[in-house]
Image (cartoon, rainbow, N blue to C red):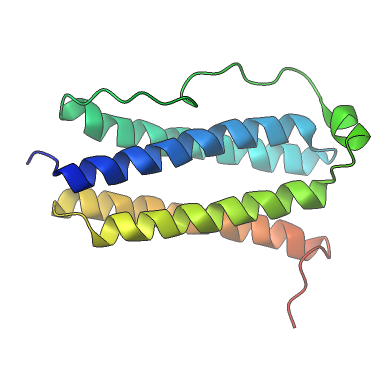
Length: 152
């Protein structure tokens, strides 16, 4: 079934978000001072790459070429924790920003799920949305376990 114009736009919007997440998580992995957080961000970047590949596949199958400013970039090299510290950015701030990003991305997928005509696409978008919610849970737990997110 060919994509509707709405599905095309929704997939492209979410693909943009995935590329932004990949870039952000790779940068955060290089900037975090805590080695466990470096790994968390690396793992999340790899999972976001899988989402981007899935979404790009839908576009490719429908002969749609996507132009995205975030698709190609040079990942950061080496450990940039010292740069982060010199800028006054903390691991807590990186986690908070990442959690906010996942909340936004999950909401974007919610709209895509509700506005997709093709049941197969809807099911795949629901799967990705669930994984985005899982990413948010990982980030939330990292913050909560470090005392950077209190729940009362």
